Each structure stands twice: as C-alpha cells, then as structure tokens.
Length: 240
Image (tube, rainbow, N blue to C red; front, side):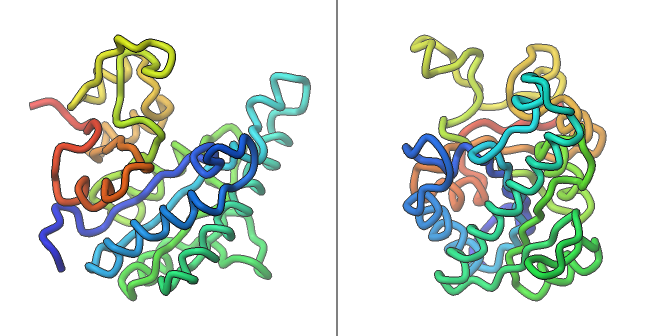
C-alpha cells in the first residue's frame, strides 16, 4: 500500500455533483472521472465506502416546501440515491473495481440489504461498498447517513466531495472575495453556520472525533492527495 494517512474512508458525494454541466440527472463524464480516481486509491489498498445523495434527480426538502408530505418526499429522495448508486456501481465495475450496493430500504433484486458486519466484510475483501437509500428513515439527510455509516464501519475520515476547493466564509461563486479555510473545528462550523454538512452530521462527527475533509472532486488526483495528508481543501476536526 502507498503511504496513505487514511486506510479506510467514507466518500460522500452529493447528487448535484454527478450532474456536471447537464443541469439534471447524471453526466457520464463526471462518473467516469470519479471512478478513475476511486480506482487509483482502491488499487493501492485503501478501503472505500461511498454515500451518494439524490439531489440531481429529486430533493425531498424542496418537494415538501411545495406542499408534498415531508416523509413521502424523503422516501422518493431515498429511491433517487439508489438510482445514483447503481449508476456509480456500473461505471466502477467497468473500471475493474468490484462493487457492492447496500440499501437501507430492502429491494433485493437490485441491492443487498444494509447489514453492518457484512459491509465491513465487503471492505475487508477489497470491494467498494456503496450505501444507498440514506438511513432508511425520513427527516435524515445523506450527510447524516455518511457520518453514521462512517462510524459504523470504523472509517478513519469522511471525504466530502464538492465542486469547490474547500470551505469558504461565503459562496465563492457569488462572492469573489470569499476567504477559504484550510482547517476548522467542528464548533467553528456550527457557530459560523458554515455549509459543510448538516448540523446533525457535524455533531455526530464531533462527538466521535471523526475528521471531515472537504475537497474539489473535479480536480484530478485530489482524492489521492487528500488521503496522503496533503493540504487539499479544508479539514474539519477537533481543536487542540
């Protein structure tokens, strides 16, 4: 194994990140580039689990704000994450990476049920494991799912893949003078209201001292550099 600082990680992908420039759905070029980066670290022996959102297909919170029952909307969003997970599995296996999709909502014809010990065994056997359908419960985001699953499988960090190169004090797309943070504490994120992950995910990570690395997934080689401990993006962890 190469000199990686983290040997078992959970990669959190937003559904929107899979859209690329398409505006909706999945951009095959984005998936292919992502799979190539995952394959590199996987071939070096890093154990990788993935949680992917569904916002490129359906956002439960947005639908509920327009009158749909929140629980019903969230279940539809969970199904969107399964669609994304299956697409990611397909492209990873085309790259020669053995992959398993495990769903928190039972649908045995397309995915395995999520069982913690089985998930850990898949990772130990060198399979990339994708956790679909959130926690299986409404009112919980895929950010919270990522923190929960990372802790359940004893991951050493969460890697939050985004379209920007870290966490800023304002949206760098609309605020050109926004300042980027190289490092933050969990309390900083909560007190400043920074959009790293939702507050439940941040609190869960803080309570269990689980580092979060926020990085730009579109920059080739960033996953490797982040896992080796290079200064890529922003790291969120406990204070000294």
